Image 1 (tube, each protein chain N blue to C red):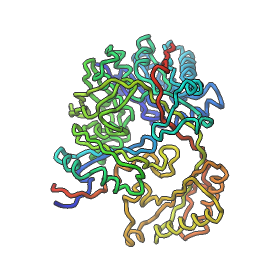
Image 2 (cartoon, one colour):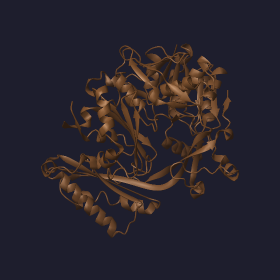
Image 3 (cartoon, rainbow over the protein chains, first blue to last red):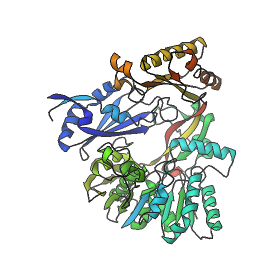
Image 4 (tube, rainbow over the protein chains, first blue to last red):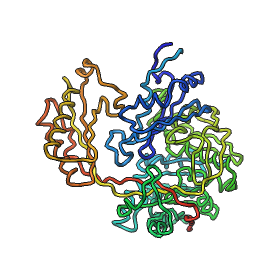
Length: 106
Length: 451
C-alpha cells in the first residue's frame, strides 16, 4: 500500500444548492470504485474540509457510475448571493477534495 | 427520433450558442435555461422599475436574429426566459416577428408566480417554512421580493400540443424544458414514471450547456479539441425512452462517458430521489455507454411517482455586502498579504465596525481550496510571485458596508511594499438577496397556457 492523492484515482465536479455544496467523486477505473467506497468516508471528507464545511457531511453511492456523491452542509458561507467566498458556489470544492491522500495498491 | 438541443446553460452563457445550434446541423427543439435563483431577484428589481420588463431580454434579441431560420427549419423553442413576466416576453417576441413580417405562434406558460398570493395562502394555513432551517416565513415576510413555484413539463407539452412554435415559461424545473417536448412528441402519460425520469435525466444532462460536452471536464482536459468552438449538447430521444447525448458534427469539445458522468453528479442531492414536479428520478439506475465518437447512450433509467408539492423559491432582501482586493508581489508576497490582513482587521476594529461576516482570502494560494491547501512551506511562501488579498464583509446596515469600502484602497500606500490595487478602485456596495426554499401543495398552483 502506498499513499496516493485522490486525483490519481478519481475525477469530480461540484456545485451548490443553497448553503450546501455537493461534490460528485467519480472513479477513473471501475477497480478504483471499491477503494473510494472504503476510504473516502463521510467522516474523512468532513475532516478534509474542516473549517470550511461547518455542518454535517452525507455520502451517497452511485455504483452504476462508479461515483460517490457528498453533500457538505453549511459549507458556502451562506451560499450563492450571501457568500463572501471567492468561490461562492463551491465550484472548486471538487479539486479541493482530489487533494486528499488515501492508501491504495494501484 | 427527435433532436432536442440546449443553447444556454445560464443567463450570461455564450450568446452565440443558440445560433450555432440552429445553424450547424439538424435539431427539432432548442431549449434555453436562463433562470438561476439570483436571476429572479434581478428581474424583480427590473419589473419594479418598469412593469413591461422582468424577463430575459437576451432571449428576445436572440430570437430576433434567428427567427426566419427557426420558421424555415420548423425548429421549436422552449425557454424559461419569461422569468417574472412571461407575457411581456411573449409580447416582445410577437412585436419582433411582426417587424420581420413573420407569422409565428408564441405561448406563455404562467401560474408559477405566487408573490401576490402569499398572504392569502398563509392565512389559509400554508406556512412556507424554510426547507433548510424550518423557520417561519413571517420572520422575513416584509422583505420578500419574489415567490415562484417550480412547475413541471406538462404545461409545456400542452403549449406545444396547441401549436406553439415558441414556448416561454416563468419558473419551472430546469429539466422540464427538455421533458416537455418529449411528452408532447411521444404522448407520454402522467404515470409513465420511467419515461418521465428518462426525460428528466436527459434534461439534467444538457441543462448546463457545454458542461456535458467537454467544458469543465477533468478527464484529459488538455486534449479536448477545439474548445474555442465547443459544441453545445443535443439529445436524440425516442418514444421508447432510448436516448443519446451528442453534439453537432464539426464542433469542438468532447462527449464521453466521463464528461456525462461529471454532469450527472452535478448539483444533485440523494441520487436515488432526484425530486422534480413530474416524477422522482433514480440516478442510481442510469447506465451509460459510449455509442460512437461524441455519442453517449443512456439506458435503464427508473422513476417513481412525484410528490404532492411543488418547490417554491422565495427571494428577500437580506442586506449588503462588498468585496475588495489588493495584490502583493515577491519577495514575501504571502507574508505581506497576511500582514495587510492583520492591519485591515485592526483598522476595522479601531473604527468600531461590526459585520455579520468579515472574510479575507489569499488568491493565488488558498482562496478556493482553503484549509485543504494547507499552509505553504516557508520556502514556497517566500517564492510565490504574487498573492491577492481579497477581503469582503456583509451586514444588514448599508453605512457599515459603505465605510468598509473606504478601507481597501489605502492599503496600497499604508501597508507592506510592492503592492497594487489592481486598478479596481473602491469596491461597490452590493444589495444581497437571499433565498427561502419552501414547498406548496400542488393543488394551489394552476399552470396556465396562453397562446
